[in-house]
Length: 268
Image (cartoon, rainbow, N blue to C red; front, side, top):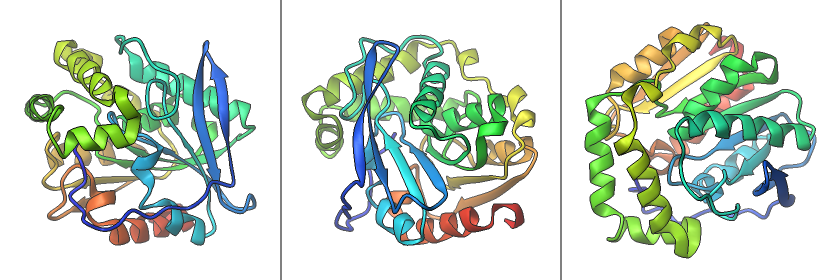
């Protein structure tokens, strides 16, 4: 949701492969990074993000030996435009992620999801446990909190002003502000019960690393605690001094801890 506070220059690494997958009548843009012989990890971006949101993670994860799948969800980045965000769109995006995995012949993978991407990862882990080896969920949401409304209104007020307006243009081009307004409008008008995922957490059997900044603008620490306690094998990292974008605010520390978990999730 929020923009990065880090002043660190962006890291870039060329994709080994990239392409478009046609799913439900529209195209999703995807990239693969890595040697092709490592464990596959899919990275799912946040509600206003894209593949570029993971630019500070890709080089480190590839050097650690992982093969990465990144993709722009429908409406984001280089994927086809999305007319609107309909009720239950996170469930739809979860189904489309699974279809993309099928098209790329990825049977069992690990997931790293941030914010909306974290909620999508939790849904995949609950509904398709046989497909998820492990997962890291960063600032995910499983129920409504009053703090979410405060965060949404902050975004709404910032869409047309730097630095958010510039970040949206970098992520999505000329449609960035329109996309952000549609996304914010959806959540402001939604029934709070639409975001109610607590009941499905107990179905998640894969090792799950729950990450959240203690100063997250959109959720209290209790939110992350409830996720970690709700899944079958959860561990928790509340990051002091971090807000909603810990992978941008503290990239080296974030990368180190996540790589350690991916290397040995059963003992984390």
